[in-house]
Structures are given as structure tokens and as C-alpha cells.
Image 1 (cartoon, rainbow over the protein chains, first blue to last red):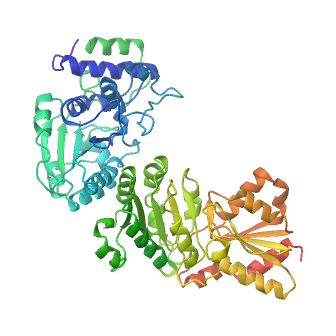
Image 2: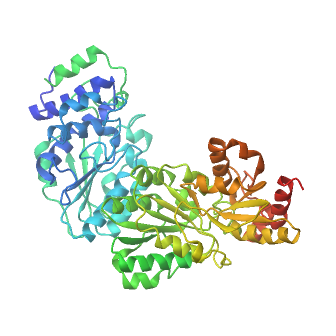
Image 3: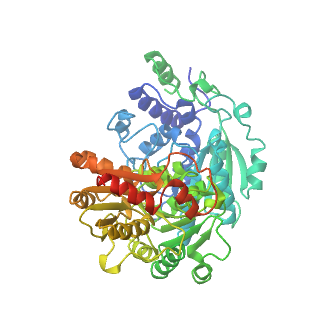
Length: 270
Length: 308
């Protein structure tokens, strides 16, 4: 049964994820599906980049700190022609560029090797400081997971970003409320997350992370305030688009997928 | 040594806008002159080493050369994953200036003693590990760091250490230095154990035993050919380090010999810190004595290997 809430573009990007998954028989499906609209809006409407020149000095920098969601990033980068989409058929093969976590220097368009959690934001602060020192107008966007911000290094970096008044830095939180073991509210509750981010010096907005128009509208307003870093909490659904995976921690990472599983997923995203 | 290292950062920064200094929460007034003169190149970021390493990586990705300074244990144990992933995996030119290698912080106890730092840093691909023996050598090292394209871990000693390095012997990252020649035996040393070995060599000379000293300031990349060629010409070799006996300089010597010249192994013994957390406070000197890093023990180890 097709998901009526997703338009053709969102389904297409998800079907690229499924194609890549097929070569490996599994991956971080739930964690990737929740970020598709965030990435789509960033790359369609917000980020400045040139796919044929991924190291262009005046590009905006996007860091996927929740590296386990890399299938969604690979999907949008392929869609934007950073590399041929067919290359994703090698996902997790021994000599592939495309591992279960993204690596800088291997995949065009990947700014930082992530996967160990809590690294993207500190790196993003350094990049944002560097860009400001170079008097660049380029901006830095870091997408973190919700479980990911259990890591203390994020909070160190949040304090530093506010201290340095990094208005060229935006943190997006993929708040799908489910981490590997279960609900974030049970494992290590992040609430009140908006208040926490505000108290750390970030001008913070909330948005439905699957509403393309709302995402676009809010991200067009960046920076929310001069001399302050920005945060956008994106309320999302883990496994978005796959009814059996939505909100289901068992689909955070899934391996051993069968032909029937793939048939179901293709039908949904057809 | 620390003062020299930080003054070198200031000098490098004066001539190269890429050079940045990043401290955590260092003592009041550290590099005040640089802060006043080059405020855009000076950062004091708080007690947040995990973030600081990531921040330095981000700056280096954009072309800067950050020199990060804090206490050695906090640059190694505390943020090991950041050092491994952010610096070494990305292979970025960040320099870690680590205060208090070995027993320097003796009064502060085992939380502050960097005694396995060489072992864990040298386990990381792309990382260079350097332990200069005195302030003059620190100066030579620092001035050669600018164009090294990989991360570097720089282990500092207490400071005020006797100057034994010599300008005419030069300095090249990754190349050991024969500070003293000797026909009978050889001490292979790093950091300020070089001074102890030179002192011991003088004692042995009084007993008619001619022992040389090979100073291995760079433990990684390891100068295997230089060390092996020095070892093959003597009858006995004792490695000496202010570091746990496993995983540091002595291990690097044994590994290289094992792979390249296994017949040399029987003439080598190692002296270092026992594989346990320190149980005493006191001073660096009293801890060294407690650990057995003394001239008497070096004499005994050398004589034993020489069959005396």
C-alpha cells in the first residue's frame, strides 16, 4: 500500500535507499527514512553547492553527524549527481566507496567521516569558525540524531558555538523519538529539548521534519538571529514511509531482509 | 620546555596566519603576549577536550594548523576517540602539545600521570609521536612542525631539564640522534631519560665500560634503520623510557628487531614504568626512583646484559 503522505520525489529518494540496501541485505533503515525530507529540502532549496566540484571553496558545508543515516545522504547526493546512482549498488561491498557510515575522501560531497556519535557538531564548530576567519559567507549545517545527543561532546560544542556567536552554524536534530534500544523518553529523556537548546544559547525553532514546505520556510529564515547559532528540531518519524518500520526500534538497523521485504518496500515507494 | 613550545607557537603564528593556538583551561596568563598581539589566532575553549579535538579537526579541514595544548592525560585518555577519528582518520595537521609526560604531575596522583600516552598514541595510524629531551630540541622540533601534513603528539617533560641536545647534530622528525658513541653498550632513550642515560654512561665510563646513547625523540614514525644500525655494533642494549614498559619505545625497538633482525633480540633489555597505576605521590624524582628509573638500575641492567 502506497504512502499517500509522501510525494513522488520523497518516494523516489526512499526507493534509492531501498536499492542500495538490497546489495547488502540490510542497514540503518529507520534512521535513514526519518531524514529524507530534511536532506531533500537542504539540497533542493538551501545549500549552496556544485556537485561536479564538491570541494568548491564557497560551498555550504553539510555534516551528517548521525553517520548511520548515510543511506539517506547517499540517496540525495546521487540524486544531485555527485556520483552515478548505480554506484550505490556496491553499498558495503569490500571495495565500495559507500560504507555503513560515510567517509570523507571516499564519497564526493561527504564533508566528515562520521559514525562514532557526537563528532559532527564539534567539527562543525571548527569549520564555522574557520569560515568566519576566512571571511567566507558559506554556512555550516550539522544534522544530529536524537539518541546521538546523549553524547556529552555535543553539549560541549553547543556551549562553544554560543560563546563564539556562530550565526553561520545551524544544528538540525532528527527528533524521531526512537533510538536503538527503544524510545528516547525511556532510554535517556532529552526533554525539555527546546528549552535545553535555548538555554545553551541557540535560537531554536521546531518543525515537522516531513513537511517539505514547512521545512523550506523555516530554513529560509536562517540565521534566526545575528550573532547567535541556530537550531531546528525536526519532529520526524523513525522509518517514515514504511508502515511496519515507523516508530519501531527494531527497524533502527535491520539485517537479513528477504525478497518479500524488498517487494513490500518497492510497492510502497512505487 | 613547555614555555619554549608555546613561545614557538607564538613565533610560528606571527609568520603564518594558518597557525592557531587552542588551550582548554590553562593557567592564568598563558601566552598572554600572543593573545594580545594575535587575538584571532588564540583560543581558550574550556574544560572540553572532546569538543576541542573536533573543533581543531574542523579548523584543519579548512586549511588552518591548530596547536592544541593541555595536560597530557586529557589529550590522550579523555578524547581518544576524537583523536583517532577526527584527527587520525581524516589525517589532519593538528599538533597536540601534551603537558607533563611521565611522572611530572607526581603530587597530583595517577589521574594526572601520562604513563601510557606513547603506547596509545602510537597505536593510531598517521599519528607522529615525539618526546624531545630538552628545550633546545623542543625549539628545533617546533620549527619543523609547520609543513608536516599529519597529526603530531608532542610529549613535554617538566621543564628546566638540563640541555644535552646539540644543534650540530641536527633534528629531523623520524630520525634518531646518536648523542654519545660507545663501543660496548648502548642506551636507547626518549624524552628526558636521555639525560639519565648520559649520566649513567659517565658512571660506567669510570668503571671502564664504554656505553653510547641513542636518543629516539620520535617514537613514531620509528627510525627502524637508524636504531638497528646503532644496535648491531654493540654487545648490549638497554632501552629506557619514562613510560609503562609495554607499548612504548622499548616495544618499538623489539618489534622492529623482531621483524627485521631477530638475531639482535637477545642483547636487548627494557627499563620502564611497571604495568600498574602509581601508588605514590611525592615528586617526579621520587616517582622515578620508586619505578626504578635510576642510574643505579641502568648500570645494573647494562652490566647484566654485558655479562658483567
